[in-house]
Amino acid sequence: MHSLCRKAGRTALILVVLGILLGAVSAGAAPEHKWRFGVPWPRPTQNEYFRIFCDLVKEYTNGRIEVRYFPDGQLGTHDEHFHAVQEGSVEISMFAPYVNLIPGGMLNWMPWTISNWEEAKIAFESGKGILWKVMEDAYNEVGMHMLFQTSFGAYGLGNRERPVRKPEDLKNLKMRVSASLGLVRALENMGKGHGMTLQTIPWGDLYDALSKGVVDGCWSMWPSLVEERHGEVLKYYSDVNFAWDTNNVVINKETWDDLPQDLKDAVTKAALEVEARLYEKQQNIEQDFKKKLQTTGLQLVNLTPEERDVFRERSNMPAIWDELCKPWLEKKYPRENMTQKIQEELAKIREQAAVKSK
Image (cartoon, rainbow, N blue to C red; front, side):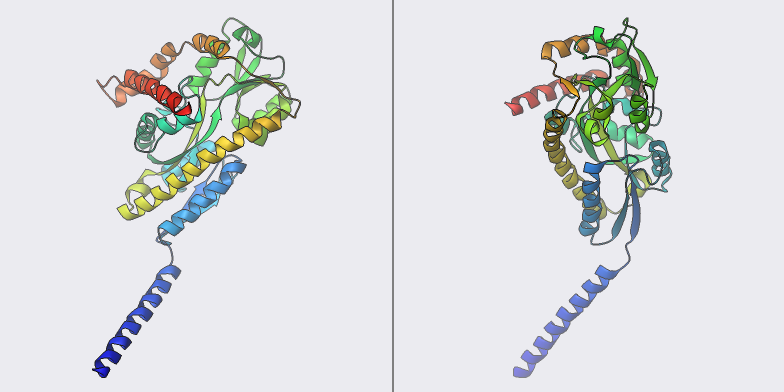
């Protein structure tokens, strides 16, 4: 009897030792996948969380996936990052979905659709939100899959000449714009008939363009006024809140599709955890940015709801939806009347968010 107990004890001990050894071998094994995550712009606040994402992917996949982070444009410009992810030489990046790269990208930030953090959370909720669903299809179309969103908040209008409270205040201003056609059309309509001109300048060149007087103003947001120092070269900033800035962190779709389900689940878990942390951080830091800007020479112009409504009406959004969104939506979702469905869903989201905020 004692002999049998001793044998059983030795067997159990051997199994424990083998388990420890096998765990050590597994922990020290080379990763099955080595990915690169490149971000094309300086993003001080986001950098911390993107590194956390890389760490969580390694943790949740038990070291089977290793992600190396390359911040601040180390791997090239925005468009260079895009083509690198599309071809798979870089696996992950964060993009502003300009329509010259992503035909359905205008749906990401159509003016006057999202105006606050609660609406953004609902509309972009992974797997459920109406804008998440449409943007996932848009990215799939160009060979990518969305991992998570990072929002920077609402766009206002800044300039070096005068406070802007009404469309007439845009008179003769030279305003910087980008390839975000929905925003371009809306701003164009806001200033129509007042001599305002638009000039396309890359986001990374905007500080210099403002400081040298190449342009008088631009759309911007609270983080950019501080972290990208737009507030140093602008004199006035109006919280028009006419659009919402959301960037998309995406992965090469072939790389994603080739993963087994357990690794997809692990990466998704890391992505959603970081997305939630980023939403909370960005909301909190926005208040800090506003307080900081109040101590600078930048004059903050707070519009009333009625003043914003004037800009909204001048934007003529039905015509912009028909011009920019409807052709792609009808081609992507034939006979589904997606333009109306999206707008109705966004209206419900505004009501839902308003109830939550009370």
